[in-house]
Length: 134
Image (cartoon, rainbow, N blue to C red; front, side, top):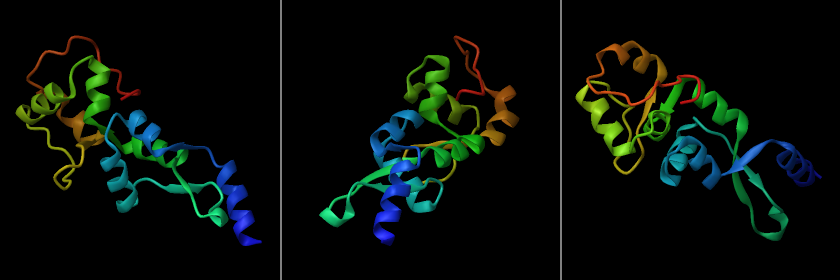
């Protein structure tokens, strides 16, 4: 009975498959896995676990909670219309550090830290950055 209840609740919870969550955050699947393991994102099992398979999905609410305080280098790059490598190196040169992560995990930043340091950025931005969308 509990398995059925959990399956129904999981199916009703708004969520994105891990690949779509990675695209939404403009980052990699490895970064999504890291954020799930650290507790920054919530993973929901979808599908019929009684049949032996689950479809992992990231809850919309955890994605939105993450974006309240953080953003990824990919979202920043999309926001100004630049390549993420350009953005990553430009932020480094401006003294803006990402949240420390293991090698192979995409960089992400605390919004508060970015907003404090935005006046120190030493590179030209081709278009205005909308902080609400990055």
